[in-house]
Amino acid sequence: MRLSLKVFLSAVAIPCVVSTSIPVVGDYADLYAACEAFGPDAYAAVRYEHGPPKIFKFGVCQATRDPEQGVAKSGAICRAGSCYGYS
Image: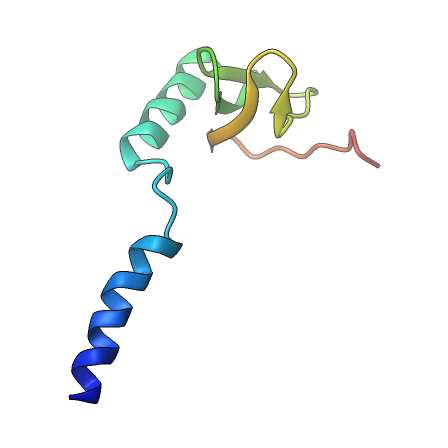
């Protein structure tokens, strides 16, 4: 009887804890393809709350928040790069 109660409580609690806004794999694939299609100067593509995906070139740091598009929701890195904008 106790095991059934634990299973029931786990089944009820998990959906309450897990976020429903997890980016899907298709979104990552689309961002990665957009980054690759932009050319060799691009290293990342980020989808923010509002607006189309934003492509970042080498030498420009990607931000977690964009003043016009809001908070970053998902992103894909198509080439290795580093950013020293915050040092």
